[in-house]
Structure formats: C-alpha cells, structure tokens
Amino acid sequence: MAVKHIVHCRVCKEPIDINHETGWMQPSRGWYYHKDCYHNWKKSNPTNDEEWVELIYDYLARDLKVKYDYFLCEAQRKKFIKNHNCTSKGIFFALKYFYEVKNNDWDKGHGGIGIVPYIYRESCLYWSSRERRSRGICERIVQQTRDNINQEKRKVTKKKKKKNNKALNMLDSIE
Image (cartoon, rainbow, N blue to C red):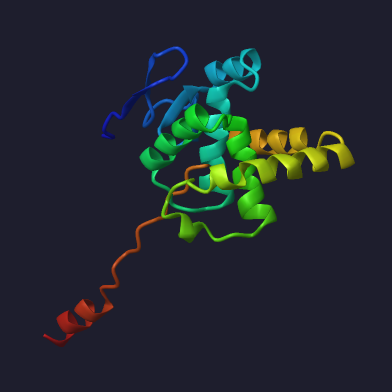
C-alpha cells in the first residue's frame, strides 16, 4: 500500500494526495496545484510579480540547469527590488541577458543572483534595443518560458534489476 503524501493547492488550499490523485501539477519544485485551479489562476492573474518570481526560478532550474541557493536568491531579489529599483521582470531579463547573451559562467555567482545590480541597466538597454529592432521579442521569450512551465511533467520510474542467481544455481548443482 502506497503511503499518502498530502500537499495543498496554492490556489484553493485544498489537500492533494500526490500518490493517488491524478488531477494535479507541479510547475515548479514545491509548488503544487490542481490543474484546473492553476489554469484558471493563470488566466485571471496575467504577469503579476509572483509569476515573474516563478519564471526566474524556473529559468535557473530548467533553462540554465544549475543548482541555486533559493534563500540567498530570494533575499537578493528582495534587496534589489527595495534598494536598487529593480523589478522581478527586470531581474528575469537581466539574468537571461547575463547568462545567455553574454555567456557568463554560473559558478562564479556562488549559487546566487548578486550580479543583477551591476548588469541591470546594461540589460535594460539591450532588451529595449532588441524590442525596437524586432517588435514583440520580449513577449515571445516570456510566452516560451510560460509554455515550458505549463508542460505536464511525466514521472519516469526505473524498473529494478533482478539479481543474477546463475552463480548460486551452479554452486547448488555442484553439491
């Protein structure tokens, strides 16, 4: 009998048993939703700050495929918003600029996003000039990231290998 693993939907706060129920999704690590709740919430709350935060961490985990210190990143993000007049959307695009356009190394950041205040203006200039050259590029990037988040995740389980008992069988036949 499978053990119950109860989590709560972030929208309706109802419990979800992820081992037995099928109508749920986890768009980001530790964030569980009923599928209907998630899609209704996405439609009713377009591009709020919480969504940008989700896009930042999804970008780090899924696109860059790096390990990050969530608590450090979150403290830095809040500090940048408060002290440096940054926005979560701007932080997302600054990270995208620094790691994809400039091809910098994640390991130099020690698991955090401390580079953001130093490259924020430069990334704003870059993305605004890109937007002028090809209208809608930023929105297409955001839509592509949202589509990646909304893809259903498949759970893959490996079958356990059976032990090879040929050697034991051979010893039994010798006796």
